[in-house]
Amino acid sequence: MGLLLTACNAGSSKHSKNTSSDKPEVQSQPDKQILVDKIHIGMTVQEMKDLYTGADFVAEPVYMYGLDGDNDGIVVKENNVPQFFVWTMEGEDKIAGIAILSDKIIIDKNVHVGMTLEDFLKKYPNEILSVNESGDSYEYIYIPDPDYSVEFLTTDSTRVAEYDYTKDEPEFLSIKRPTATIDRISL
Image (cartoon, rainbow, N blue to C red; front, side, top):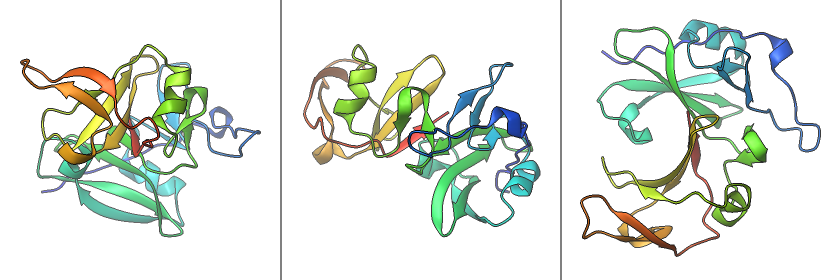
């Protein structure tokens, strides 16, 4: 059986628009929940669907988003454009994770899908890339506060960075492609 995804209304007063770019802004709520457009982790799938009445909800396997498992999550599409992917724990009805897919949704410091690594590192100059070891299908930078990862979908031949693979875990050496763009942002 697939994953059941849900969402809830966190309240429109906590959702704002970025006046400089008119992109939905990801914000931290007082209870430390991060609001992504109109949803947040902990909402039910039905609550999410109630907020996106004109959207399409498409089941996709969670493994396509770097998660371990054979269950499905939901891609929310508006006007046939993917906005985000949500997933729940098996047997649960609350959203456990969100992957931002649209460049219209921004996170802290104006970080968004489509931003170059070079521009991202201007905002977070001390962060380094890592390779997802569970499948090597993407590289990422984890930002602990407010708790998200920017991800670059890559293969061995399209890596964003150079790594030393002689260690137990690949060790970052240098950036190869500073103009690579963020493919998704996971919470």
